[in-house]
Length: 346
Image (tube, rainbow, N blue to C red; front, side, top):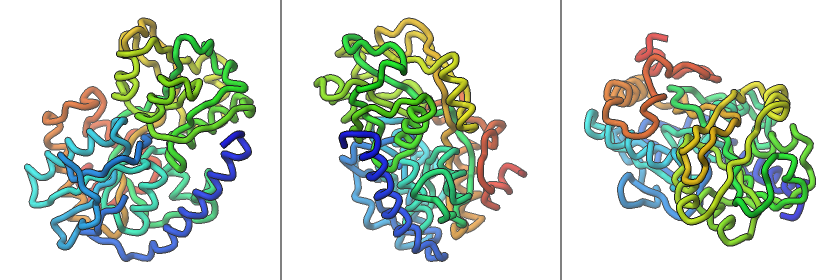
């Protein structure tokens, strides 16, 4: 991938594959649909059934086994999904098969064809998919069975580099080698949106999940990387512990330009001290993480799983300042599943 134009060809190819997967979305899903393979990004290295890994191929021989698609192991979706798994299995008769994936776009395809019962996705990707617009994977191919459950927390767009790379603003990215996230992920979509909004077209693109992007930065293989997820992101924390890094702000006129072109972006700030060596607050933008499902999952199942999670939020250790029942419909960008609507009385 040597240029922005080459990147677009890859994204178009991803869109074709996504459309092929979505073509099977004719109501063949169900409460126990089997898991397959994604904010938040993925290194693609492993799946998980919650604690030690699974290939996701055996999900759902019965209605009590549910497939939950997360994101990469280096982001927030994956560990948070495993906390949801623990809560749901402790408070219901359901078991959850949590799968590591490429995150939002991939997860929409899995929900569409019924291979996932629940998934974490970004609210902007959800809107694109439901309305058949926005990106190639969904253009004129609306995912009609996609439905919402709850919004969770802001997913911060973090543009990270090493201190020695002489990149202190987005304008310095011209001519740089940039990891924009896994092909087809919400991270890649957001990164390209931001670069296009700011007129950055002369760059070399790499595509990998958060963990691999951190390795690329440490090895000098890339100049900067976009990461989308709730701070602190584990892969960035690990990088900061061994390297002097810099978080590049998306601020001022640049931030206003990004928001003008894409209304789903909102102001966000990464507090100073979030990452070792980054002492000052850094202004940026964010989208919203959400739980989604498909219309073939029964109302009783969705209500039971939703109730288990939101009645036991005290068991969570991740994003606890943001995930609440009161805010669970803030930023909901698609139609709510009837089971979730019943729980939230929405």
